[in-house]
Image: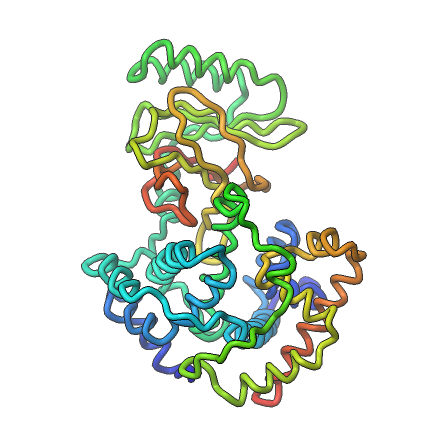
Amino acid sequence: MSQERHPTEDLPAYALGALEPDEREAIAAHLETCALCTGDLAQFEDALYEAAVIGAVNVEPPADLRTRIVARHRGARPSSATSWGDRVIAFLRSPVPAAVPIALAVLLVVAFGVLGATRGQADTYARALAGVVDGRVVALAPTGANPDARATVVIPNQGSPYLIVRLPVPPTGKAWEAWVLKPGSSGPVAVPAGTTDRGDVFTLSLTVPLGAGDGVAITLEPASGSAQPTTQPVLAVERT
Amino acid sequence: MPDKANDMKLVERIAGGDAEALGELYDRYGRVAFGVLYRMLPGPEAAEEVAQDAFHSVWREARSYRSERGSVRTWLLAICRNAAIDWRRTRGKRLEREVTIEAAAELLSDAKVDERVVDRLRAERVRAMVGRLPREQREVLALAFWGGYSQSEIAARTDTPLGTVKSRVRLAMNKLRESLEDER
C-alpha cells in the first residue's frame, strides 16, 4: 500500500472524471500503488455506471454495427501487450534526438532535412525554427513511415505549446493529427491534440495541455480526425 | 443482468485474439454502450463512429483489464465515455455541437432500461437513491458524467463557488456508493 496520504476527498471526483488534468495525474499515480484506494474507486465507479445504464438512451444500434466491429478484428491480433503507445515508445527507445537547444535543433534540421525534401522546404522549416525566440524546443523523430518528415514541439515561456511541422499534404480524405502522450496505467495514452489538412511547412497548435514529461506524436487519420490513433506515427517523441 | 464470471472469460478470449468474443461482448453490452454514446454525442452517426473506436480500444486493451478495478461492464462503459469526451473535445467543438448544460443536466432518463444488462434490484436501489439526492447534487453528477465537465467548468458555468461544487460531488458520489454498499 502507498505510504502517501490517501486522496479520499478527491476520489469521488476522480471516478466522475471531473478533476483537472494535474489533479487527475496525481491520483492516478497514487492508485498505481494503493490497493485500498483502488478498491474504493471501483465501488464509486460501479455505482456511477449502474446509474449510467439507467440514464442511457434506450435505442437500437445500427443493425450492421456488430458485423463491422467483429469484421475489423477478425484475423487481427490484439495489441495490448504492445499497445500503440508502447510500440511508439519501443521505437523511441532506440537512439534518437530528444530535447536539444534551439540552435542545435536548427543545425540538425538543416543537416537531415536537405536529403529528401526540397531545399526550399528545408529552408522554410529551418527559418520557422530559427524564428522561435524563447522557450524550449523538442524535436520529434521520424519513425520511418515518412523519412523526410520533420516536426518540433515549441514550448514557449508564455503561451501554449505548438508544433512546427514539415510534412506533405495528406491524401484526399485524410489529415495529420497530433497526439499528446500522457502516462497511463498500462502505457502511454494518446490524447487527440489537433488536426490539419495542410502540408509543406506549417504550425499546429496543441489543443490539450502538455504536462511535464508528456510525449507527442503525429499520425495520418481520416479528415474528420480520430478519437484514437489508427495508424503508426510518422513522427514521435517520448518525452518533452 | 451482468454475468461477471462469463464477462471475464470473454475478455480473456478477446485478449487472446478471438474476434467472435468481441462480438459476444457487443451482444451483451453493445446496446447500452450505444445508448450511453447516443446521449453524450450529437447524433447517431457520431455514436456509431465512437462505438467502433471504443470496441477497438477494448480489443487493444483487453490484456490490461483488471477485475479488482471494476466489472467488465463498468470498464467497457468507461472506455465508451472517455472516447465520447475525446470526440467532443476534438470534433464536437469544431462542429459547435457541444452538449449543453440543459441537455446534460439530468442524471437518469425516463426511458425504459434494457433489462438484459441490469440487475433489477440494484438498478432500483440506484434509481431510488438518485431520486433522493437534492437537485443541485444530481445536477453536478449529470453535468460531469454526461457533459464531461470538470468541477471548475461546472462552477464557472453554473456560477457556483468551486468549493460548493466539490462538496456536492463528494456528497452525491458517496450516497450513490452507499446505495450498493449492503451488497458488499
